[in-house]
Length: 116
Image 1: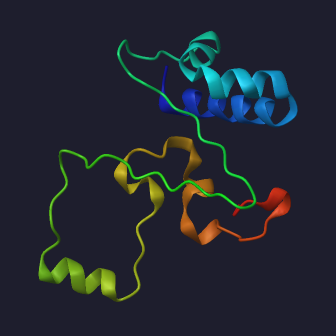
Image 2 (image 1 turned 135 degrees about the vertical axis):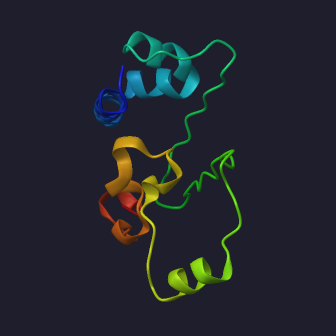
Image 3 (image 1 turned 120 degrees about the vertical axis):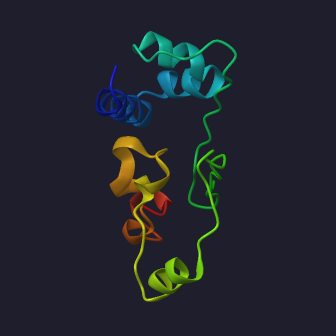
């Protein structure tokens, strides 16, 4: 299953959780089982936790540092300081959710009380 397909399925899971409280409760309680039931391959031993944002609580997820991570040199720092902004997918973790995760799309006080 490619990244685009996983992103599509994850979008369907989120949409269903918004409209089906029983499904939402199951997703919060046993995300691994739900993801597997929806066709996403979850490696053995991988723990998955679902966190739910509210109007008064926002979870900021700090991804693990990629093996390829390195400090920027002075020239690269200068380029970034000039206002260039890397997209959320630069780390390779965001898949099909670039538009949702990119800080430029965040809107505090959005419908439902979230930041999006």
